[in-house]
Every structure is written in structure tokens, then in C-alpha cells.
Amino acid sequence: MKYKCKKCKTEIEINKYTLVFRNMKIQNKDAFCCKQEMECLTENEGIPTIIRNEYTKEDRIIQHKAKQKEKRLSGKK
Image (cartoon, rainbow, N blue to C red):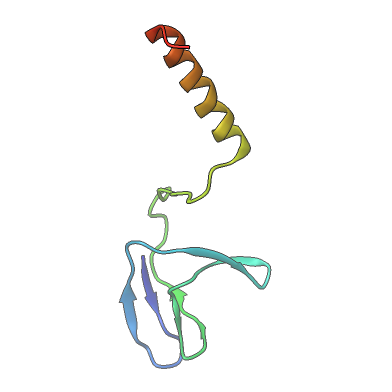
């Protein structure tokens, strides 16, 4: 994603970034310059890959069931 500062006209390209929820909208945490959000120059790049750092309750249930099935198949109790 390419970004440009509205005040100083600095341009940056960010490949990996963290999204945060600020002022009732989702923003790129690293796309700030001159104490304001930079303008995004890249449009319609497709769907980004989202990497979650935390497990949800459903994730833990799926992992637990997979471990139980693995134990049954290997014959362990």
C-alpha cells in the first residue's frame, strides 16, 4: 500500500501493517505523518491477508476436538 502525507508530501510504501480502530474507522497504524493520517494512494489491490494474533473460543474448541480425534486414532487414552 502506498501512502502520501497531505502536508509535507512524503510518500511511503508499507507491505505489512497493523490495522487499528480509531475515530470510528479502520486505519493503518503506521500511516501517520505530521500528526495526521496519510492519504492512501493504492486502490483495489484485492483482499489483504489477515493474520490474527489471538485465538477465539471457536478456534480453541476446534483444536481440542482435533487433539481428541488424534488420540483416538493413535490408540492413546
